Length: 516
Image 1 (tube, rainbow, N blue to C red):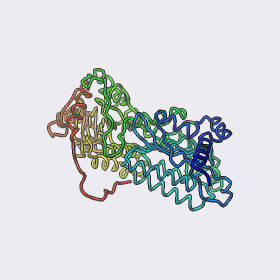
Image 2: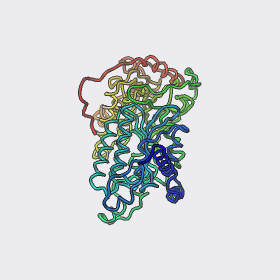
Image 3: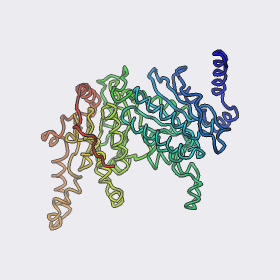
Image 4: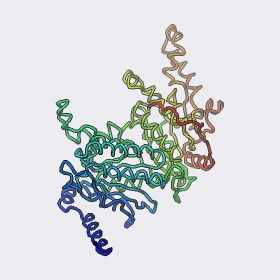
């Protein structure tokens, strides 16, 4: 029988061996331009703060040759630490151990970490790098993946969940990051897909590479699955730290507030020149946002996808805010199916985690066309209406130039839940743009007139005079006030201060039925 000292010595030796790792596998990982799982955890967390859990856990499956392959950690490093002094739970799949394949023990460790993070109310960060499911374990693997998916779902809206794809994320396992709040990808080394190239070739006869199938560019520009992209592992880990700095620990807390050195009364004297008077002339709404927020710092999410809509985090007077804005540089800022999905999910995240929502509106309408109708613009647009109407956090809307039709409602009007609505002096608010409205209202008169174009111009001038400017919006209490562009920052901060005590409980129900 071993003494306590002998047992302690053996445990220490085993732990040191696990931490040291397989030098050949580590060299291969470095050769691919990637950090190891342990290096990633150390760089993500504050120095010396990581506490590992279940280091010596091994898979219990012994058939199909697994008895000889069993290794401590079972291919995933799990535990907790701090980021900027705030606790987080983290797991990192380890490609140097069993290729990071997901087995039953591996899955149980991840599920435990998610559940524990939820119970103690701290964010979860997952660093994914795995060849996929360990098929030797059969149904035990599918059960393990199911446990992870359920844990992700139960934790949704309770704690922030961040997934970083730092290598392959293949097959059914890719549903776990899809169930989290934010996905980050690394250029050139990360891929995420359900069905791999070999299966596609077998079933469809198509040749496709892993990068073409699910690389960073696919998910950043086409699928919309990726929220942020990084040049390498180190940049990805820094981006996670930056993102967490805007978020609360859990849904019961407010986001962290910092001491801002940016004057809350700072005048935005050049803002008017950034936004042209000509309603058809584009401009970059990102420049407007950066002028408004503290120190010009803004974390744009999904910047390469649905570029006609801008979403992201900034701060006003040191307080985290979520920004939603039409982008006139793409599709004139109109709302299509992807833009609606992009905005509605972000709105719901902000509402779940007590982050006030600032909406900047310059929208000509929903993007028209047969294709959009076939893709379900009605259903997708309804998601934005639902998200804003359901939100209980402070909501402030600013109309920069125009707001037409149902798209105006989708960008959070007073009746949709905005607590404060401001309009700039030259704003144009109407059911539709002047050209379309005149053609509907005065169609017969124009067609029967001796000079149709003269009548059209006259009616256009009358229509524009009525709906151009803020007067009708103010008279009918559509907006709280007209503000000059230069005072936008100051008025938003004033509104946030008075709305800080807002308390609104949703109607009693199990849950609503959101259009999806």
